[in-house]
Length: 534
Image 1 (cartoon, rainbow, N blue to C red):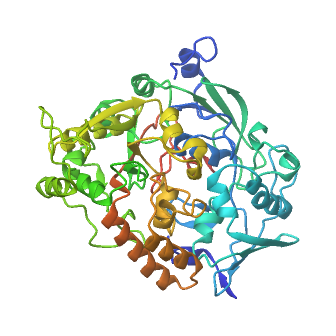
Image 2: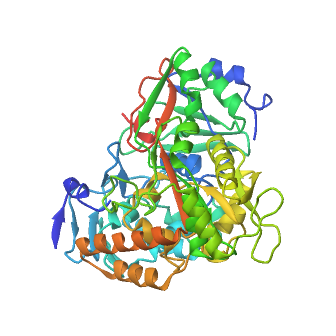
Image 3: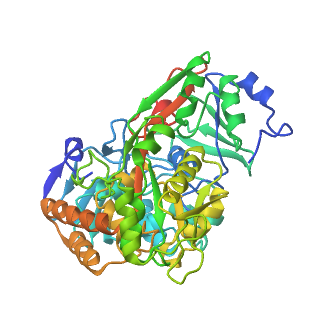
């Protein structure tokens, strides 16, 4: 058994316009001060509990304010102890992790937070239907508690358990959830820096500082979160001072607008949020790997990044893992070669064309591929339109269908459970930073075991890949895991179950006159919990 501390983490593998009847914009503007800040939210996220939030941004981001985890991802993008003491133990085989819960932790209702709550959390989530938590908890064989000491015994070795498990799992209250069959019915109540005191669906959230928070009372007492689904209204609200910031990153085309506005400052950090083009590997013609690869060779990423992202993005890798992360595999760059793409499609039998030069299916019928895109996401919409143009140049007809975000989710990731299938041809998608940064991300994205492969939205299945993934998960050798990850990335790159297009820079626009405590946090937005901690 080896004792680990903070330094060890660095070595580990990494709708609506504001409703005047409820919250008039004028009132928000008048009330906003250091004591109260208004932060725009782009969409409703239900009651924002670990079982009800809808999207990574803004849902999961706001949930971090309300629900804490044993470790956290800090401003430097490292997993560090949070609710536990700095000293902890990890066994040599990475199957046993021992931490000690801090004294004096409390729930928002004033009840003490104990090791029993932690043990209960990991057991209870297995009774619910949220894949994110099931994936983490299913890797835990048993949990022992002795006072404040908590020991996790894992089923398989996991050198990344701190970052991908303990820094991700939101701890819930046993006295609130015990005996509750449907966790979604429980109101929001955590132990984080803020507690939710009011919520009106599709209108607003109100968060109040938790005075007994163990890190100290937050610097802003009240956070008003009006839901503003109209992008232009959101932008104007920030420029006019009606809100101090908004959740998420601004799109690149707005940089000049915000730079010209008074009292607005841009905070830019390296981004880990991905933009992907998903292929449904269970549906023809995408069930042919060469067809998918051919499409990737007809897509010009340089053109997309320059025209859509205005250069404010890093190009994706065919190996999925972002350059700079521990498991990144060199040499898996996408190759733009439309001539080669056409040759591959010809070889596959897509040689007949209609009067407009669009390829017909192998049966001689029209081939019109649908590309789903989230209507409220300008960057994805423009990317989808450009992809349709580029694929049209090799005779592949693509129709872009713009849908509300939740409707896209229903087709791509029904009930957020990949085992429940998928109903699409192609879709624009994106994963949040925690998904991209975790070790074994390629396993989650491509493994046909839909528990360990909980991010496999393409329905990709390859026996050789699955064997490598199983070996990866069973290995306690960090170097061996890296080697296996490289092999899996190389295999996935050769079959293209999806195309990792780019990672946009994270750019936040904030009003520093209303509040000057904004913190830059690598890989996330200025609206993060560190901006409000003393």
